[in-house]
Picture 1 (cartoon, rainbow over the protein chains, first blue to last red):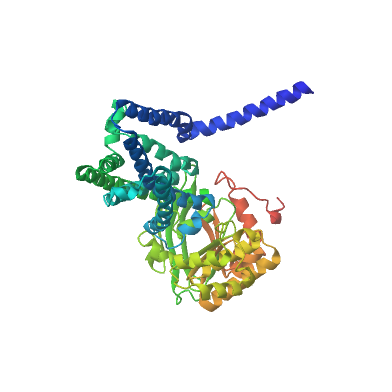
Picture 2: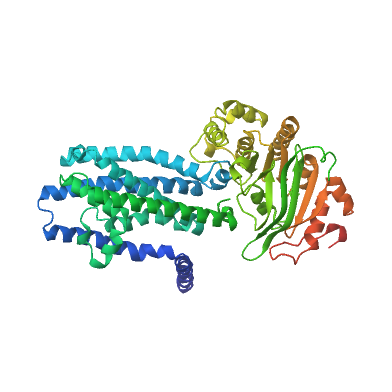
Length: 270
Length: 265
C-alpha cells in the first residue's frame, strides 16, 4: 500500500537522520563543517577585499606579487602538514597501525620518515608552483633572493608542528577527527595574513594573528617582496614562536600517545 | 614449572598485569613466564582478556599495574629494544595496501633493522610454502595467503618470541597445517618461543606443549594439555574450555556462558 510504503520510508529516513544526529552530537569536531568553515571563508575573502580597498597595495603588480609569493610559501606550510598528517592517517585507513606499533620503530623515527618523504612531495609541489607563477604571471620567485630560505624553513617547521597536533588528536579521538588534517589549515590561513597585513583583519582577531609564527614569517616575506631585504625582527619572532609551537606539539603528541597506550585505543585499528 | 624450564632462558616474563577498561577489568593479575623454544597457548572464552594480555606483552597497551620483560628488557623503559626480540602476527591484520609481497616484507625487515632482508624473505616464503607469492600485490591474496605472509613478516628478524593471535582462524585445514608445520620447524630450528591464542583446541593440542587458561582476566589453569585436561577430569582441552567458560558466567558482562556437555547442561 502507498501509505504504508510512504510511512515506512519516512520511518527509515528519520532513523538515518537520527543516526547522523548522534554522530554529530557525539563528535563535536564535526560541527566545524557547519559552523567554522563558512565563517573562515567570509573572513579570508573579506580581508582580501579590505586590503585592496585600503589602497595599501599601491599597484596591481605589487598586489599580485603579494598574492603569488604568499600562495607559494603558504604551500610550504600546507603541504608539509598534510604530508605528515595523511602519512599517519594512511596507516589508520589501511588498519596498519598495530603492525607498525609492534615493531621497534620509535615514534620520532616514524614521524621523521613520513616528513622526509613529505619534503620530496613538497619540493615537487613548490617547483610546480614556482614554474607556474613564472609561466602564467611572469612572477620570478628567484628575484626574492636567498632570504626566502629561512622564511620557508620556519614555515616548514610550523607545518610539521601542526601535523603533530593533528596526529595527537586522531590518536585520542579516533579517525573521526581526521577532518582536522585538512580543516585546521583553513583556520591558520586567513589568520596568518598571507595575502594581506594583519591590520586588514578584524580588530578582535589581530592579537590571535600576532601570536602565530606564520603571521611574522609572511610579514617578513612581504618586506622581501617590497625589496626591503630580510626583516630580521619578524623572522626572529617567527623562529622563536615556531620553536615554541614545535615543543608544544611534541609534548602534546607524547601525552596523547601515552593516553592511547593506557586506554588501549589500538584495538580501534585491529 | 614445566620440565626443562629451570635451565632454559626466560624470553618473556610478565608479573601482576592488570588492565581496567571503562566498564570492566579486562586483565586481573596475570603472570606469564615463557622460555626459549617453549610453545605456549593462551586460551579462554571471548572477552577473557587474552588479546589485551597479548597487546600488553607487545607494548601496544600499557598495563595499569605490573610489568613485562622481554629477554630481560623492561618494556616500559626500553620498548624499541625489547620489540626487536618479538614478532607478532594475527589472522585479522591486513597487509599494507599498494605494495607487493616482497616490498611489504622488505619494509618490515628494515623496520626490524635488517639491512638486506632479501635472504630472510626468500627463506621465510619457502618455509611457509609461498615462494610464488613474492611478486603478488597484497590485494590479490586470499585471507589464508595474507595470514601466511603476515607470519613470514613476523619471523623475518628471527625473533626470540613469536606472538600469534588466532593465526589459523578462518584458514582451511591444508593452510592451517602448513602454518603449524612452519611454526613447529621455526621453534625447533631457531628456539623461537611461541605464545599463541586460538579457539581451535585440537590445533593447540597439536602445536603447544603448555596451555594457560584465562577466564575473567585471571589465569585459572597452567600446564601441559594432558595435565590440564586430567586436572579437570576431562578427556581433552575442548571439554576443559567449555567447563571453564561455563563455570564463571556472571564474572564479566560479556562472557558468554557455554553448556557443559559432560554435565548434560
